[in-house]
Amino acid sequence: MPAVVIVGAQWGDEGKGKATDLLGERVDYVVKPNGGNNAGHTVVVKGEKFELKLLPAGILSPQVTPVIGNGVVVNLEALFEEIGVLESRGVDTSRLRISANAHIVAPYHQTLDKVTERFLGKRAIGTTGRGIGPAYMDKIGRLGIRVQDLFDASILRQKVEGALRQKNELLVKLYNRRGVEVEEITQTLLAYAERLRPMVVDTTELLNAALDRDEVVLMEGGQATYLDVDHGTYPFVTSSNPTAGGACTGTGIGPTRIDRVIGIVKAYTTRVGAGPFPTELFDKWGEFLQTTGHEVGVNTGRPRRCGWYDALMIRHAVRINGFTDIVLTKLDVLTGLDEVPICTAYDVDGVIHREMPMTQTEFHHAVPVLETLPGWTEDISSCRTLEDLPENARRYVARLEELAGCRISAIGVGPDREATVAVHDLLPQSA
Image: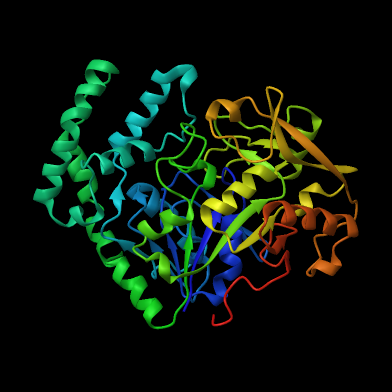
């Protein structure tokens, strides 16, 4: 039975949570393979809005087992705060399972994240300040603390001591901050151990056994393609691999078991944080997209930078991830525009690029070459089939599909779960 990967195709905030939730009734497991509480999903169910950060969107579907995979970095305070909010609203969170191999975001990671950003000044990355980068640095530097370490106080204390030996030197001598006490951190983390214990399992075994039983496993990537530390707009990226390949390493599900890779694409482009953005708008149209699309970060509350659809980015994302399908979101936001521009090429110092430039310098200097399609004024929020859409909206969708080189299988026409135009089945027939 299928393993399915959902991946953001732009800089995040494309609507991955809604896409995951849309498939929820046909899925048995939803696993988050990367990131932490630095990325948020907004899901609307029957008019009720849920803002999820660390938890997989599948937690809102009663028949789904939600899983936090080994590739995630877990802030325990944020985890239990989010669980508490959902439980207060009547959501059952008892099915949640967490990988014993997932790494912990400790308080000192958040401290380092914030002081480092301030130290960088104008060269700041624009992180959320939640310690995600420093936690991944410790993971790669083999100084990380894993969930399983909380169940052995002696091991935990040794690992905290090892991690703080270098960090206290940095905090005190470079950043002029007070050092962090080993015992304070150890006891803070140990306080979560017993509450965490019932949730912790070998998630690699759990998920592969589910596939062996012909159950459907959905991998819900956090962040997005152009925030990938290898394939994104480096250094303005996250510290993990939120592309399709990262879903394998972040869950322990092998690539030969994946049947579908679904790219989530917003009908225009947005970005939070610093970094190049060729189609960014600084005029009334950028304000229109920001206001009409309610483009504010779930986690940060920061307004998102907005621009027209960038076809070069999406075509490149299709290649990197091997998308089998695209879910196009927020098409309704474009309603009311007389014309809808699409970026189909870049002008870089007089040279036309019809594919993504190789270097960051070229991308930074890229000026969008726009193709303009006629807009539509009809309300599309009640459309449920492709035929229901106005002719110009269908024309826009068809052009995006042509430019992407990948079929568009579903179209979001509103924030609610039901506000979706179904074009092709997103799951293999066996599901």
